[in-house]
Image 1 (cartoon, helix red, strand yellow):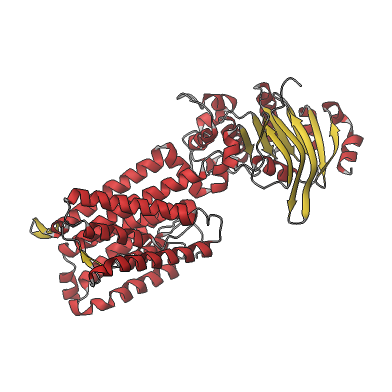
Image 2 (cartoon, chains in turn orange, cyan):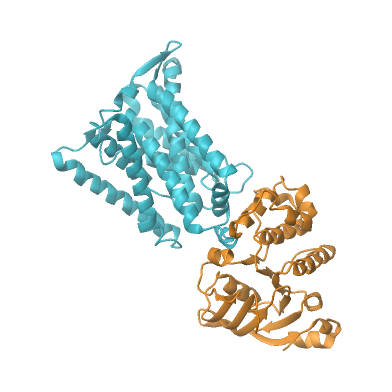
Length: 237
Length: 304
């Protein structure tokens, strides 16, 4: 193997008390790849992301970021090592301006940066530039999602984790989010995408793992997106 | 009766009330900053001020400026020590545990102060060197104590600097983010320990400033120095609205100002009723505006 994948997970196990939430989960995400993680509610998708990011402690397993183990570290320390999570529900600071939200994303940025450090974010989502002095709380749901993604990206992470970015968005806005994700992949980021919209995720991602009851059951490729039978089977796996 | 009250609330009383309000506002900011990032009401805040006052008293034979420097060093060091030794290990504990812990620290510090103080067989020390600031000066026929002017100016400048720091600097942005939603802030890479240490440092600096200004007005320093003030400010902070720094600050100022005015308005032989009058007002305010006097447009919030 020439290059270690940007994100590598081996035999991850997370328990809530005695209840196993995630078991034997292994997956890799390479640079410039989108890997999907789909499955029914309560399958352990969010828990997986939280364990990777250090928000919940894993019982066992290995999580490597660019070849370095990160399990057991604090979330801010993992963020500084190049992992960014766009949390479910966006979690933007509604009382802060759009620009302040983006500047918060710089907290985890490594190395020096110039004054126009936010230019890239504004280029990806021009609406954020127009509203940069406004309170983020007045943005629409779709715009807030764009802000949450942009806030994660300004840190220039190696790995981007997204927890249901299309949740609660109107269909046309969902299109925008998925288009942005494709663009982000072009930028060379490694993306792990947790989603409920199975078909769209399978179509977009380089490969998609189906998680059920805390275990990976199946891996689908982009070609499987049209195969309804396989999609349905995946959910009953 | 009304006439005497009017006569009592003269310009001098108002000036004193503004001065007290300014000092209480600073204490409110000191308490509010730490509450913001730690969700911890630091009941031992008054004992930081007390430690500073004792430092001023024990170094009264030094040059005033060094005495004040020593006060700052002691208060800030004690404040950081408190964070490192107690708050950090307890982080994540329930608010009730943290609150009770700060009670314990408060009583411990008071006991230590008593032990140090009693060595000369008397309780209480007098901070003689900085007392001259308490002399009055006459502005347009009104006697205003110099400390009142100093207190108002220092408070205004300190508050402006804190506001600038919070609104214009990166560490300020991180502190505000940590106050609003600590979990998300950490997710974004905001370093919890750094932000908390900075808030505690800032809060300690404010306590030192308050130490100096209170000691000028009340140079007789005992183990319960600033205890009553802290309780009153804590009440003021809750009345103003503790979950926002500026409402907490306004609450601190308001209760200081009100205390000053009522104190001036009450005939001298009836000042024992001062706390009753102030706290009756507090009850009234909390009945009418449970979320805080200045918490406009927000629903009622659950309080400790």
